[in-house]
Image (cartoon, rainbow, N blue to C red; front, side, top):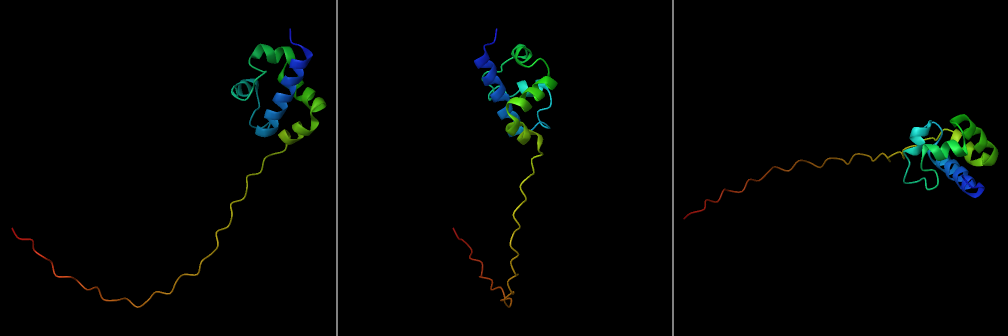
Length: 109
């Protein structure tokens, strides 16, 4: 049996994970359970079934309990735009200097 306090912790934990990752990235139970390091209270499919029933009821329950977090999960995450590199004017080339070759030094025995 799952206590109401554990159920509330599971709801909050899943809502926070979904708000960070997004519903488009975590779209099924197997993917959700693959985040084992980040999920403390939701460890198995059995616990998920006891708390939520199925995926659709989970989403609707979380919309009622944590609407702000689910709103973050449903909005597509935009990738940060790369910073434009400043255009540097090319340096004017100096007059080419003639290469001076040094005479080869022979090493004797």
